[in-house]
Image (tube, rainbow, N blue to C red; front, top):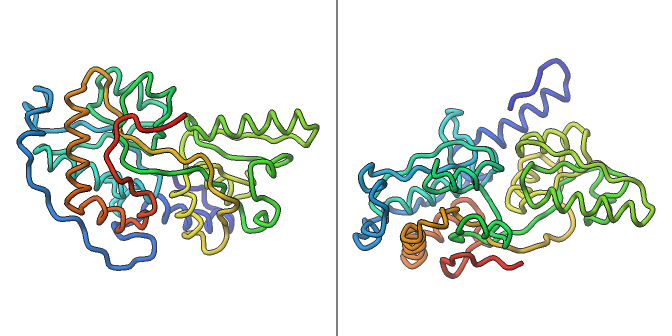
Length: 300
């Protein structure tokens, strides 16, 4: 994730990325926060778990590491922190098991859950009809997509339609790849200047591209776009209006319906006892709170 040294721009960007990818446990503004209390085991939910999880006492979870404030590397550059790890640890406590996080690329999550390499996966994945044909989602957060640009481009970009003639960065495997490609076709059909789409394997590459001027914009999830803008010291701006509001979901193998019920029940318990709200408040994303733990609740 680190940039090559040697030029002032690279050094400046390295500082920016170190905040984004290697932040500590505190939210972006450093305010004191109250962590959610330890959870009590719910025996009924524990009983729903598959035997292999009961025997190991551990949930094997695929997770990301570079999508702040939902998930990013802690100060040791090894363990992960953020909304998703904290929420999954609390869900594990309610079910009476520990959690183990395995770093995995975004576009490998569905296949990994289908092949049972992981019991669960969580990495800011939208619950969409196409994906629901492959895995079951337990929805934990509502989100949208937004645009991040350099400060110099903020006055000229307010929507996807303004990206004609520009270069846009998107993360591989995300819905934003389709958004950018569809907009590129619209630009061409309207006889406008070409929209060039750069697809990166992770969010860090996208942010680096915008910061260095290789790309004019990054299309990503609103929580991380807002976070990156806030961390940039005014170098980057979130522009336009968020669009496509859908929930993020925890991925579960479609054949493991008892595990689906256990995860849904644990999440609902966190919502009912106030812990869910405390976790979202800590990471300053309370606007994404759901009222109820839903299964496959995303719309088309």
